[in-house]
Length: 252
Image (cartoon, rainbow, N blue to C red; front, side, top):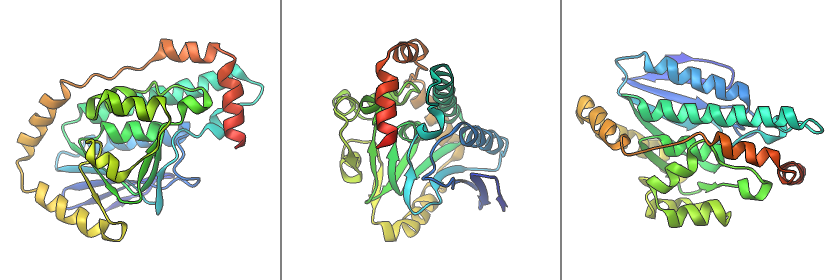
């Protein structure tokens, strides 16, 4: 069964719910897309028969380019820009909270570039896999922004402070193999083998006790703390720097 929406489809199959992202322009996260994704998660949460929720891009070679700054940034209107971006960041934070607090097991599959707040959503998921052409990038320091949606918290807790420094502070791009070695991804496979690999992996997991997995997730996630960095975001948008840097970043 497929439930079609504007930018996100829900596909129900064999006690699985696939949340497939397919917004044009590389699944860039604007406010309507984030609202749709959040609503899809709410919808899936009502389905008691579901064992696994799989989030993946339906666009080949790209997972998500992160926040749609081209739409959220309003030239010559700093108040609206602040409002747009802080609203988007809070929406990502709330999506992360829903995933972390869910009884369902969330499985994220990356199939290419994963940038900014899209990385945060991936890190909120319980199991994370990727094709070997995947990579992540947190460009906030380049354009003067701040990943205030809980993504930095999750990166530190899923991986390490050292990796958070390299990825978050030094603007380093990490490929799938590096991310597999430091714990961000649980597995990496060849791009042309991903569908077969996913099916084998899901079948293996579905043999486990759903209740045991759900309660184990609850214990694990009791140790995870994420914060919506509202005060720090206000500091960012009180500065002149963010508007200058963001304008340059969008032009490039």
